[in-house]
Image (cartoon, rainbow, N blue to C red; front, side, top):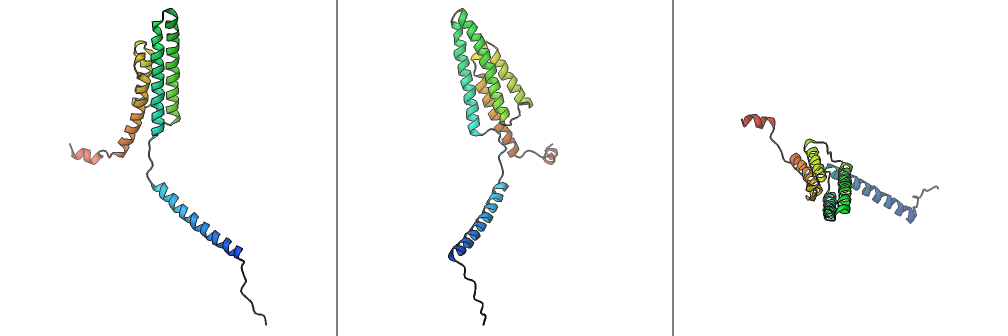
Length: 168
């Protein structure tokens, strides 16, 4: 008489099978969550709030250093020479630093508005009397605002060609 008994599984084997089933369910659940996250709209903003604060702070620091350096003009001959050399050095290094940071963030600086903003910032930084103005702070603010404004333009629906022709 050969009676075949049901195979007996040890408790460790049963626990392993249960854990595998739980893991499979968890993986399937994570895949659903991942696809839901992929379907959410992503922000096109290139400059995050932290980077914006850093850029404006860097611009403010450069402007503050330029004001202190510009005050060296009140020292007769040596102060004028040191002030002239260091002010141009800070202007060039500061402009390169801010522009390099902006380029690393992936923000194009060669657009019409941004190129004009860059040229104005460099001009303000290189003219001796205008160095006292917060040119680099304003430049960083202008870049951040233009990045946020460009995002707002993409989100806000504009007039379509049909609407424009009807409104004439």
